[in-house]
Amino acid sequence: MMKFAIFLFFAALIPAKYASAQACVIESLINEKVQAAVDSKVSSILAKAQLTCTSTSAPGADAFCPSGYLATGCACGMACGSWDIRADTACHCQCARIDWTAARCCKVAIVG
Amino acid sequence: MMKFAIFLFFAALIPAKYASAQACVIESLINEKVQAAVDSKVSSILAKAQLTCTSTSAPGADAFCPSGYLATGCACGMACGSWDIRADTACHCQCARIDWTAARCCKVAIVG
Amino acid sequence: MMKFAIFLFFAALIPAKYASAQACVIESLINEKVQAAVDSKVSSILAKAQLTCTSTSAPGADAFCPSGYLATGCACGMACGSWDIRADTACHCQCARIDWTAARCCKVAIVG
Image (tube, rainbow over all chains, first blue to last red; front, side, top):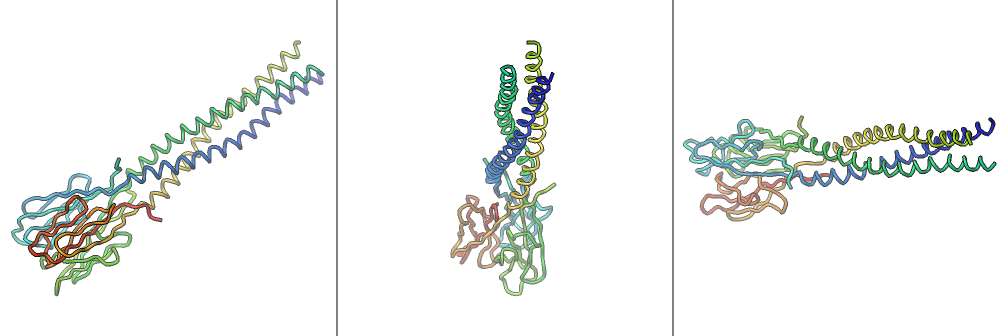
């Protein structure tokens, strides 16, 4: 019976020791892998976050950006440099009887 | 005593085998989970990185962007289209006796 | 022999139980660590994704943005406000005999 107890003790103790040692190894393994994976992935994806711009123009005093884009500047016919941006996405030229209006439109996009 | 040695052998060997097999399973489990978590998280957060713009205007030849914004374009009164941007954040209209100046101001912001 | 079988049973069973319990603990540990690491890393890197702008100007009707930048707006000499952007990166002023052209150029950059 004494032998039985001794064996039982080892049978329980040894795996427990492994389990405990493993927990530490596993935890640092997880930390290490997570940091490396996150670093490389985030950097590679972030490098794809780029400014994307396009231009639109229309006859008259108003030009509109495509959906998702914001106006960053406007140009007007007749050499006119007086304009304002409406609702963040439309250019309005203020000179009388303006012949054309152009909008410069940009957004942040994930490219590639 | 012979029996004892045999039992000890098993008691030590079996957990060691488990530990080793587990290490592999754990490592690939970590890799897999990290990749999946990073992919979805980065994509969902990146989708929130958007261009945010606002306009300011002021009497006279100078208009200033709010803190954190950069000027992307300027508009001037009196149909004037000659301007320059100072310190990345301020619009200056160059025509003489200009009555008003407007700045278009943008930044990248985490939205939502 | 009976004792031997019992001990073997324990020697095999106990580590197996540990292994199984550990798998769950490990899996949730991985999930937790991954989520935390991704959250903090993505947020800290994303905060560095900023709009960066610069201006260029040149004599004549054309001004070009530096490599990597896109034109967000243009200014012209002679009070001219009529311009267009070519190939996303160059400003062209449309008024006759224009003396100078300036381009406002921006990109998304990882800052700091």
